[in-house]
Amino acid sequence: MSIASTTAQVLAQVDIDADGLKAAEGASSAGFAYGLAAIGPGIGIGYLVGQAVQAMARQPESAGTVQTTMFLGIAFTEALALIGFVVFILLKFV
Image (cartoon, rainbow, N blue to C red; front, side):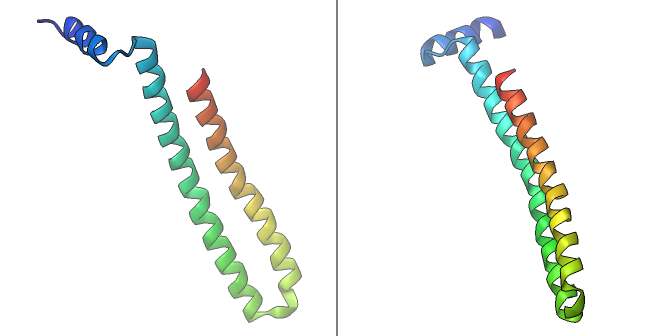
């Protein structure tokens, strides 16, 4: 029995056509890609905020400058997560 006939029999038993199976595989890989894309920015933002709080505690007079720089860093780091979300959408619908 060939692989193609076995696959066709399994799909007939499960009542899923090949296009539906392909879409399900694409969705799982897209979800995995977005999950990986969200891990890095999450770690980066946590580290950035922790270091900014530590810098503000050591030198309270420079808190304004540190806070501004922290928010810029958060924005750039969050852009990575948004790029990952765009890749997720592209993998899912294209």
